[in-house]
Length: 66
Image (tube, rainbow, N blue to C red; front, side, top):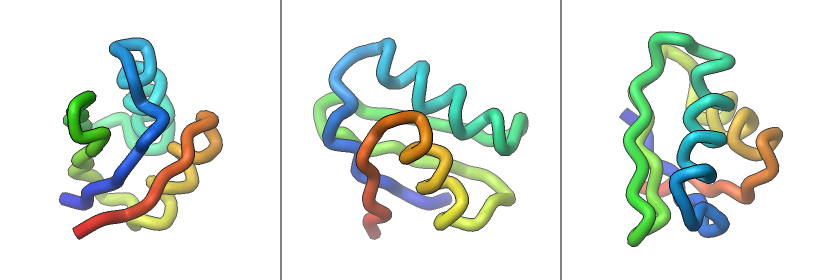
């Protein structure tokens, strides 16, 4: 599991957009997001840099944490 900070994520629509972006690259990815902390936890076979790129391509700034 990798964690990302996505500070621009403010609503359920944002979570849905981030989740769709990640699952476009890995349909089996498990995505858990927290609006209060702006953290997204992803379990995937994709490398962290690729996941970050998918989130970025969806229009959100992203930084790997932890």
